[in-house]
Amino acid sequence: MNVEKTLTFPVKIGEDVVRLRQVVRAEAIAIGLSLVDQTKVITAASEIARNTIDYGKGGDVTIEVVNTSGRRGVKVVFADNGPGIVDMEKALTDGYTTGGGLGLGLSGAKRLVNEFDVKSTVGHGTVVTLIRWKA
Amino acid sequence: MEQIPILRIGDCLLVSIQVDMHDRMAINLQDSLTTRIVETNARGVLIDISALEIVGSFIGRMLNNIASMSRVLDAVTVVVGMRPAVAITLVELGLELPGVKTALNVDRGLLLIRRQIDDGAEHA
Image (cartoon, rainbow over all chains, first blue to last red; front, side, top):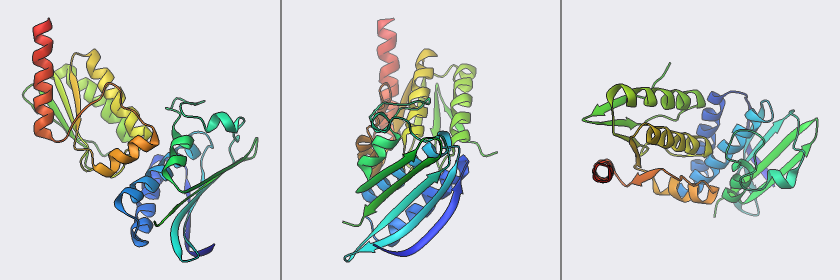
């Protein structure tokens, strides 16, 4: 996978999530994602950003334009140094939450993108990666 | 501090969300809307989300909360103007909006509120 473009900034407060949505939207439009696919990847990124803030105590997000065998995509990587996810299976289940949310963040975001990966080490933090490819 | 304006039309309150809200704005809107329902004796709340390019679980929860709070205060909430791409995304995200009534546009939303108020009056 080749990286055409990359941008990293912190996600610590609500305003950062607004900025993230703007950046992801701009890149999604730039690679020609359909309106529905733009909406899906922005929503997924927004959900995960909220997790990074609420559960990971803030972290960094990297937005990349990537390509592989002729197709392009938007890749978003969230990394925090928070407490990590103790029960990954539960965390990926609809309706499961340890906070006050609806428990749709991880499981819902996963459905909105083409590739989704969570790596977490208890006590060290969590890295969530998502990619939406141009169809 | 940016605020979402709440307009009064007869016995209804109209909120048109025109900006990408961060969390504090959404919470402020929830609070000021409940206050205004009581102040104005509003029977209906119309929330226009036609300018929103995405609705995630946070805004979804806010809409659910507003609907529940206004119901307790004897007002009907109708959300109008959801974009098709937003509707598709909401369903895949798995976000249900139980208790939130929706209409395609402001006109239909006001009609729906009127009908709900009239139905309520008949059963009273």
